[in-house]
Length: 118
Picture 1 (cartoon, rainbow, N blue to C red):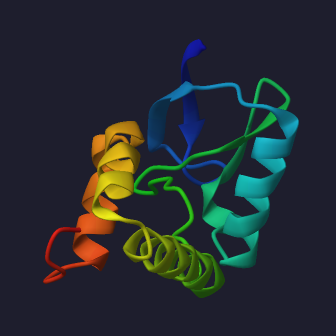
Picture 2: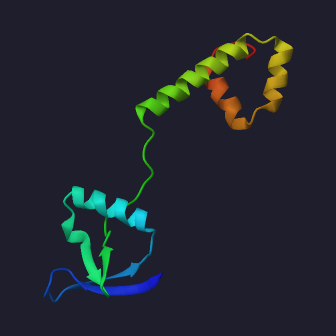
């Protein structure tokens, strides 16, 4: 990581901003800069030492939220698993429970809320 760069906020401006330069892959740079350009964030683009940079002051990155299709598939999977689980005998349920992680047990317990002897 290049430690810092001083960039005029506008060409010829006396006010500068200092920031750290973090190199990312070309594909990441293209994706981020494309989204910012599409959102009309042209003010975020500068040239430092002959290289394009994106000043992300006030901009935070996040992972995409799960879309409705992914949530629907997850709900369907949980429903099928719970339906199959309820068809097992009590002894079989105990064997399955012993193989599940705590997270999996929590998901099933929440889906089967109110079901005795899940």
